[in-house]
Image 1 (cartoon, rainbow, N blue to C red):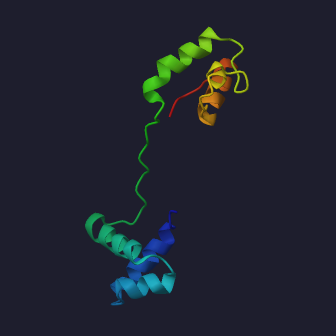
Image 2: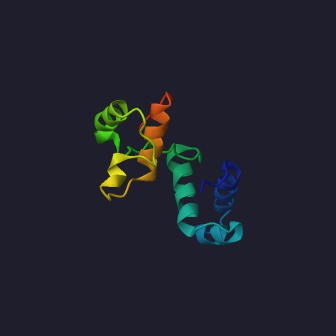
Amino acid sequence: MTLSQDLRLRIVDLVGTGVSRRQAARQFKVGVSSAIRFVKQAEELGHVAPKKARKRKSRLDRFRADILGWIADQPGLTPTRSPIKKRHTPVNKNVAMFAQRAHAGANVRIG
Protein backbone atom coordinates (compact mmCIF):
# COMPACT_ATOMS: atom_id res chain seq x y z
CA MET A 1 0.00 0.00 0.00
CA THR A 2 1.31 3.43 -0.91
CA LEU A 3 1.21 6.01 1.84
CA SER A 4 0.24 9.57 0.92
CA GLN A 5 2.93 12.09 0.24
CA ASP A 6 1.46 14.30 2.97
CA LEU A 7 1.92 11.55 5.57
CA ARG A 8 5.46 10.94 4.34
CA LEU A 9 6.26 14.64 4.72
CA ARG A 10 4.77 14.77 8.22
CA ILE A 11 6.96 11.84 9.26
CA VAL A 12 10.08 13.48 7.82
CA ASP A 13 9.21 16.82 9.44
CA LEU A 14 8.62 15.18 12.82
CA VAL A 15 11.97 13.37 12.62
CA GLY A 16 13.53 16.72 11.69
CA THR A 17 12.36 18.15 15.04
CA GLY A 18 14.41 15.54 16.89
CA VAL A 19 11.90 12.72 17.31
CA SER A 20 13.32 9.29 16.51
CA ARG A 21 12.23 7.46 13.39
CA ARG A 22 10.73 4.71 15.54
CA GLN A 23 8.69 7.17 17.59
CA ALA A 24 7.49 8.91 14.43
CA ALA A 25 6.47 5.56 12.95
CA ARG A 26 4.57 4.68 16.13
CA GLN A 27 2.83 8.07 16.24
CA PHE A 28 1.64 7.86 12.62
CA LYS A 29 0.96 4.10 12.80
CA VAL A 30 3.28 3.13 9.97
CA GLY A 31 6.05 0.58 9.84
CA VAL A 32 9.41 1.50 11.29
CA SER A 33 11.15 0.51 8.07
CA SER A 34 8.83 2.84 6.12
CA ALA A 35 9.66 5.80 8.36
CA ILE A 36 13.38 5.06 8.04
CA ARG A 37 13.04 4.78 4.25
CA PHE A 38 11.11 8.08 3.97
CA VAL A 39 13.70 9.99 5.98
CA LYS A 40 16.57 8.45 4.01
CA GLN A 41 14.84 9.24 0.72
CA ALA A 42 14.24 12.84 1.79
CA GLU A 43 17.90 13.24 2.77
CA GLU A 44 19.30 11.64 -0.39
CA LEU A 45 16.82 12.75 -3.06
CA GLY A 46 15.22 15.82 -1.53
CA HIS A 47 11.67 14.47 -1.91
CA VAL A 48 9.46 11.72 -0.54
CA ALA A 49 7.42 10.92 -3.64
CA PRO A 50 6.60 7.23 -4.10
CA LYS A 51 8.74 5.36 -6.58
CA LYS A 52 7.12 4.41 -9.85
CA ALA A 53 6.03 0.80 -9.95
CA ARG A 54 8.13 -1.46 -12.10
CA LYS A 55 6.26 -3.03 -14.94
CA ARG A 56 6.30 -6.77 -14.49
CA LYS A 57 6.59 -9.15 -17.37
CA SER A 58 3.86 -11.69 -17.79
CA ARG A 59 4.73 -15.35 -17.62
CA LEU A 60 2.77 -15.70 -20.86
CA ASP A 61 4.97 -13.31 -22.88
CA ARG A 62 7.15 -16.08 -24.23
CA PHE A 63 4.06 -18.00 -25.38
CA ARG A 64 2.39 -15.05 -27.14
CA ALA A 65 2.86 -16.36 -30.67
CA ASP A 66 1.62 -19.83 -29.71
CA ILE A 67 -1.48 -18.51 -27.94
CA LEU A 68 -2.40 -16.20 -30.80
CA GLY A 69 -1.87 -19.09 -33.22
CA TRP A 70 -4.21 -21.35 -31.23
CA ILE A 71 -6.82 -18.64 -31.20
CA ALA A 72 -6.56 -18.10 -34.95
CA ASP A 73 -6.73 -21.84 -35.66
CA GLN A 74 -9.91 -22.39 -33.65
CA PRO A 75 -12.55 -19.72 -34.23
CA GLY A 76 -14.95 -21.25 -31.68
CA LEU A 77 -12.40 -21.36 -28.89
CA THR A 78 -13.95 -20.37 -25.57
CA PRO A 79 -13.01 -21.14 -21.97
CA THR A 80 -15.65 -23.89 -21.83
CA ARG A 81 -14.81 -25.47 -25.20
CA SER A 82 -11.05 -25.39 -25.02
CA PRO A 83 -9.27 -28.42 -26.49
CA ILE A 84 -6.79 -28.15 -23.64
CA LYS A 85 -9.52 -28.98 -21.13
CA LYS A 86 -10.38 -32.20 -22.99
CA ARG A 87 -6.91 -33.49 -22.18
CA HIS A 88 -7.64 -33.01 -18.48
CA THR A 89 -5.01 -30.32 -18.23
CA PRO A 90 -5.97 -27.43 -15.98
CA VAL A 91 -6.61 -24.27 -18.00
CA ASN A 92 -5.42 -21.06 -16.48
CA LYS A 93 -8.38 -18.71 -16.19
CA ASN A 94 -6.28 -15.79 -17.49
CA VAL A 95 -5.28 -17.70 -20.62
CA ALA A 96 -8.89 -18.64 -21.29
CA MET A 97 -10.09 -15.05 -20.85
CA PHE A 98 -7.26 -13.82 -23.05
CA ALA A 99 -8.32 -16.26 -25.77
CA GLN A 100 -11.93 -15.19 -25.50
CA ARG A 101 -11.15 -11.47 -25.74
CA ALA A 102 -8.66 -11.93 -28.55
CA HIS A 103 -11.15 -13.97 -30.56
CA ALA A 104 -13.82 -11.31 -30.04
CA GLY A 105 -11.53 -8.85 -31.79
CA ALA A 106 -10.47 -6.90 -28.74
CA ASN A 107 -7.05 -5.34 -28.75
CA VAL A 108 -5.39 -7.81 -26.39
CA ARG A 109 -2.04 -7.23 -24.76
CA ILE A 110 -0.14 -9.89 -22.86
CA GLY A 111 1.35 -8.65 -19.64
